[in-house]
Image (cartoon, rainbow, N blue to C red):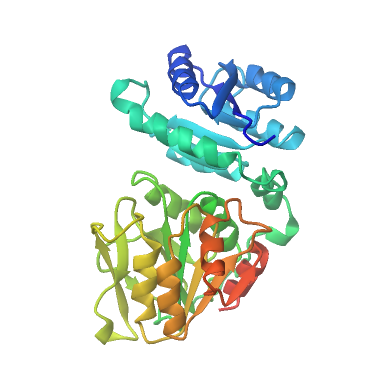
Length: 351
């Protein structure tokens, strides 16, 4: 019903945290807190009974932890879930995304008045989660069970280090981490492209995320550092709270990365626009990829890539958990191709 409030289930093992989150939501007329749970067992019962629109989920809980809760929820009744869990649980948060959670907000161990920005960010992501199509909820966990998404392995292949033949720049936000995990599971050690990623993510998580991508078994992936050289079958994740672009372009076909503090012109951090504009000037085959995310980061950078003769691929509404970023590029007429995620992954695997 138009104008209906967003019905939220708050799950946290701390009664204090539950109260802080619920009180903040109660101040926003768009939300209604329909339930509170202190462990996964209670949360699952309430979710199945109350059928909330969205769920705020802690991971470390007694009786049943957040991972078991996610597995059971996504199997029985997929509902958008935003993880609200400790900074210390970085690897666990990424695991939760693979199990079907839509996004996450890191939180301190105990909420207080000084942590209002964390709760505000949670509320914004809960608001966004309501708009996700039901058919896409939990698709990440289901995709991992599909044989079509098994990692591509090239055992025993030794690939000499060489300059890339293609530069691939990827921009993503909400829903992007799981999309990227799926894409990198398809890439091969023999790839002739280099991949640079601007994923909107807090700074304490990008290194862990890069390590997780590296374990997909395809290209070598790391968090970008100043002076990193782009070589074939390499991937780099922009550090949180920073931006990346290419260094001295006069040295091509050799390219190095610069890791920069954001400027006043960077509306998003990390900035897909800055990365795309940079690779557009590389003077070699370039592919810009826009995956799931809110906002329009990558729009102006996509224009630069197209103007330079490069290719821009947008994830289609069919698979994008949040279609804001891809749709902005499509509406501007800048997309060379609009493909569902499996087709994007398969194409990138051929480079």
